[in-house]
Structure formats: C-alpha cells, structure tokens
Image (tube, rainbow, N blue to C red; front, side):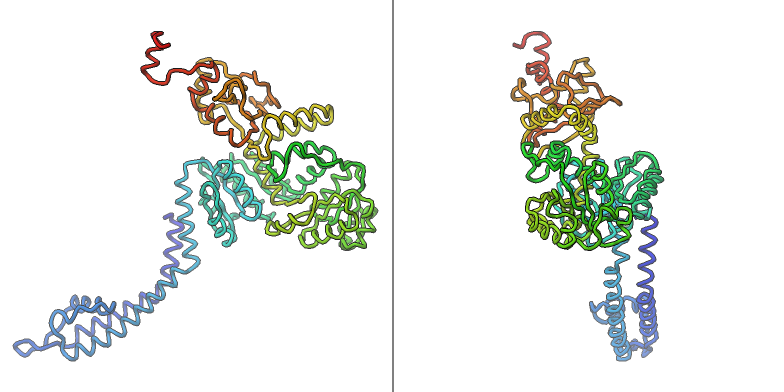
Length: 577
C-alpha cells in the first residue's frame, strides 16, 4: 500500500477505533486486577490463594468472548465467581460495542474509498498492454469505451460520480475496464491511474465541466509532456487555453463538428453518406443517398452555443436561416434574421415554417426539441428535420419521433475521438474527397462505387496498420531479405492468391508524404502506415498475412515453402519435389 493510502487508512482506523480500544483496555485492566485481588479457595494450610495476572488474563480472554473453558487453574471461590459474573457481562457488552464500531468502520465511505483507490492503483500497475486514460464516464465516455474496446484497445476510467463507476462494472465490454471514483482534477488520481507509465498512450478528457477539463489537461501536460491529449470543449476561450499547453493536444467541439457535418449534408451528401458508413451508423449503406437540400430556407430553434456555431456556418454558405430564440440578448446581433419567443407553432409560422426546406431543433432540452419537431411536421410534412438529443437515456423517444437526423453531441464526440485514435489518417481521406467533389464529382462516385463493390455491407472495419515488428513481423522479415512486398500483396486471399480480400487501402503515409487510395503496386517500406477499410470477417485473414511468414511467402511466390527442418534440408539439396 502506498504511503498516502496507508496514512489515510491509519488515520481513519485510529479515529474510529480509539474509543472502543480505550474502553476494552480499561475493562480488561479492571477485571484482571479484580481477579488478582479477590481471594480464591484456601490451600491445605488454610491460607487464601490468589490468581496470577497471566491466569487472570487467560480466564478473561475466553470469558469475554463467551467461549468458556471452566474455572482455571483451580476451582473458584464464591467471591471469585461473583467477580467473574461481573466481568462476563461487562466484557461481553464491551466487545459488542467494539464489534459494532468495527462493522461501522468497514462501512465507512472514506475507508472504502482508500481501499478502492489502492486496489485500483495496484491493478493499473499490473497492466502490461497499452491503454487510454479516460476522464469522465458520462454518455460520451460510455459510447467511446464501447468503440475503443471493440477495436481492441484497453482503457482506465476516472469518474467523479460513484453511480457511474458502479454502472461501469456492469458493462459487457470485450476487455475489463478499470474504474476509480475520484476527482480527476486532483493530480494524485492521475498518478494513481498510471499517467506516467509508458503503457498510458493518451488521455481522453470528456467531462461536461469546461474548467475541470482545462485543469485536467494542464495537469496531464505537466505530469507527462509527451502524452497525447484529446479534450472536449464547447468554449472558444477554453479551447485556446487548452491548445496553448502545446504538445500533442487536440480539442473536440461537438457543435463545430455538427456544423461541418450539416454543411456536408446540404452540399456534399455523398461524403456525408461515406461518413455515416465509416461510422457504422445503423442503416447506413453506400447506395443510400439523401436528396439535395440546396436552395431552400432553414429555421434554427435555439441560439445558444450550438445555435451560434450552426448559424454562422449556414450563413457562410449563403443559406437563408431564421432563428427562433426566447432570450433577446442571444439574438441582438442577428435581430433581422430572428423571431423572438419560444419555438411554438405561432412563432415557427412567423419564421416561415410553411415554405422552409429544413428545421433544426437545437435547444438543450430534449422535451422542447421533440415538441418542436412534432408541431413542425404537422404543418410541413416534407420538412427535413434535425433534432438535438442531449440525454442518451431518451434514445427510444428519438428513434420513434420520425426525425430525419438526430444530433447527439455525446455520440458526435465519441465518433470523432474514436476516428482520431483508430484511424487518424481518415482526415486526409475526407480532405481528398472534398477536393474531388469540388473538381470532379464523377471521381467521387467512382470511389464510392469501389468501396461498395470491394467492401460493401453496412458495418465496415477501419484500422491503421504500421509496417513494423509488432504489427507486421512477416513483412519486416521479407524486407530484411531485400524481398519486395507490394501493397496489393498484403491483402491477397490466402485461399486464392489471385483474388483480393474484401478490403480497400484508403490512405498510405510514409514520413510526411501521404497518398490517398494508393495503388496496389506500391512497394512497402519499414514504418509505412496504411489505413484499411475492410469487412470485419476478413480482418483475421488480413492480419495473418502480416504476421505469418509462410502465408506471406505463398502470397508473394505462389509456392508453399517447406515448414519443417527436414523438408527445408531436402529443399536445400534439391531433393524435395
């Protein structure tokens, strides 16, 4: 046990057990003294006998615990028996008091917290695999942990709410996730979670408290200058301060992400469809495209943090947007494009509900948002509706609300962070798609068609593979032998080397050089990184190509190499067929 934990436990134990220990000592002392002073049965000379302190203690030891071994060392006198009766009742009552205090002590939340912290710290020290430190296990943390563990990553959680930590123990994650109920703004708990260990490869700060997130980020950068930090923030001021700590630091703002996503939805629906497909959104397929939303007016309900960002993004695109907002101070700068008041049917009609093409219910109240959409759909059934979902627990309501698109900030952050961790090269891929869409929309259609044919399905797997000893030992062995290994060789089908596995290499990175949709004849080198999109069931066969020397040799040459020492010896002498 660490010195700090030992000190806390000792203090708690001594504080709660001081009184019962003193009472026990006093009772034992008085009872023993009485047993020693009270005369016993006279000896053969008629002289009174007295009990020694040892025998007095021994007698009291089994009497006080109601065990009972008789009168020792000899039969008691009546006076001793009277005193023994007194000692029996007093000592038993004292022990009941002491045991009650012990039970109360074991239920003490501070002691339980100290033991839980020590158990957590010990378990973290035993971890040998890489893991992410997650601060905050709300809706975002829960969704992100599901994605991380499904992708094969390990995680350690610090959460202030004890009920959320209890919920963590009930989750059926593929790998065990360690959790500690503590305030992550206290640096000691970050140390307990192993932030200084080399196995800790990043910290994900996901709480809803902006100030707490900033403090955790600063503490993490001081404790571990080289650590990757990904922090949630919806405040421009906080974002600047977080990024100012330097290093490998990233800030995720769900509202900005959504604003960009909304822009894609309106102007680049094909890219939006790809995004949903990569995210494994239920029902997302590459042959499903949203109709064009260009050329119409929009209504935005709510002009808070999210509303301001969305309105700015739509205005930059030249989209006619009317805001409905009950607080006058929130719309002072856009008074000409706003209706003051709650988003009831009257104000929605005043904002142009009958003629608009889309409506965004973006308040921070789920009930209001669902009510807005319900009213709007009755007046304009063809309306494209977007609704903000603030609480994950209301998921069933939003699924049945007949809404075209549900914005769940926690899900937006979870997906964004998951992509940053599991497929960091995907950003380059989407950047390329936007460029392609602007210059040659037909090429974008060809890319989508290739993914649909070569991968297909509705739940692809994205993973970045690095050509190194850890992820691709077989490839490294071939490169050491000066054997050329091309990109296309990596995902040949070991059952039929003339065909490829259902996979597509999306991005290749070598140093600072990035290639999107690299050709199959690209020769691999050590430390190359490749982002693959593939059918989940093909992943095990693809990874076998990277780690199994015999499989890779067959894929490269078309010949089965000898696997045993004897057959290799025969081949060396050209005896083997």
